[in-house]
Amino acid sequence: LADDHDLRGRRVLVTGASSGIGAALARGLAAEGAVVALSARRADRLDEVLADCRATSPDSCSIPLDLAEPDAPERLVTEAEQALGGIDVLVNNAGIPKRRAAEDLSTDEVEQVVRLNLLSAMRLTLAALPNMRAAGWGRLVVVSSVAARLSPPGESAYAATKAGLAAFHESLAAELWGSGVTVHLINPGVIDTELYVVPGNDPSFADVEALPADALVEPTLRAMRDGTLETWVPEWFADVAVVKAGDLAGFVQGAAEYRAQQLAAGVGPDAD
Ligand SMILES: NC(=O)c1ccc[n+]([C@@H]2O[C@H](COP(=O)([O-])OP(=O)(O)OC[C@H]3O[C@@H](n4cnc5c(N)ncnc54)[C@H](OP(=O)(O)O)[C@@H]3O)[C@@H](O)[C@H]2O)c1
Image 1 (cartoon, rainbow, N blue to C red):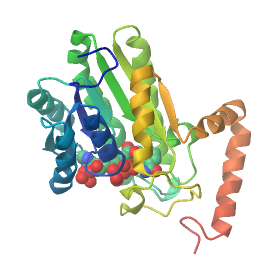
Image 2 (image 1 turned 90 degrees about the vertical axis):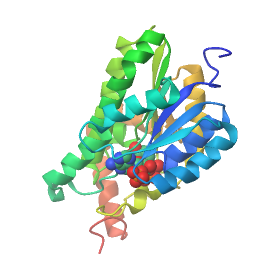
Image 3 (image 1 turned 120 degrees about the vertical axis):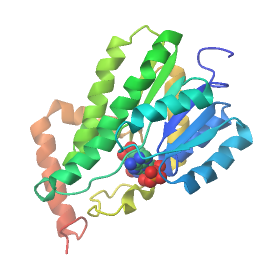
Image 4 (image 1 turned 30 degrees about the vertical axis):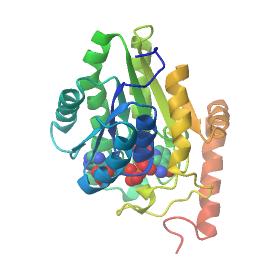
């Protein structure tokens, strides 16, 4: 390996690699010469992404699996370590949406989104960490969300999973300081992916322009190279988080007004 920041030959596990952001990151990492293990449930979709990855990184592989099953996170790390000979970079990306007003949420829905978005991602990190620590080098990339910081109305359970993911990895980043293992939170805004057509969700309130999944690739690679702890795509969302931190009550009032406006304009769940 040429240097600390060179991804050539690095062994990467990407979860949620069958579509959207995970597929874009897998292709982007393979284009840098990283060897990628792709995971998600849909094996046929993984095969399509894998074919692209193998064009630049022939030893890449896929490990189809449902991360919501018992012991799946630990099993995935073991299988990826066996297939790749180790894991240098974990991209915790698999996730599901939950666009539903809190009072309409069932406990099953809450459990489902917490199990996948939060619990499985924490377990993946914990399972991959010991060998990264032993090697003295590792990159923990977490595809979080602007929702982790902005708690948008209509997405309480989803926002809670992303906020939990951020808090867990921030604590961990401090514990790992100086160890050679670094944490990189990636906060996408609105990205044009299948997340917006997953069944069992209300329509989105968001009215900002959706970016393509490829927009995440360069900022994520840069974060890993520069050691950046938190990255926003698009960047202006960082300013919104600063405003919120300065006046939480004012921000929540503004969010309530925005929601009311959107509903009145026919956007969102109860619009009709
Ligand atoms: N799109 C956005 O606007 C946006 C904004 C902020 C954050 N994000 C985050 O970005 C990440 C990727 O989402 P995306 O937007 O790219 O949507 P996506 O295209 O729907 O991708 C979600 C990925 O997660 C996988 N997945 C879902 N359930 C799984 C399970 N039980 N076991 C294993 N894998 C599972 C899906 O694959 P299978 O269905 O094949 O299992 C798919 O590869 C998510 O964590 C999401 O919260 C997205």
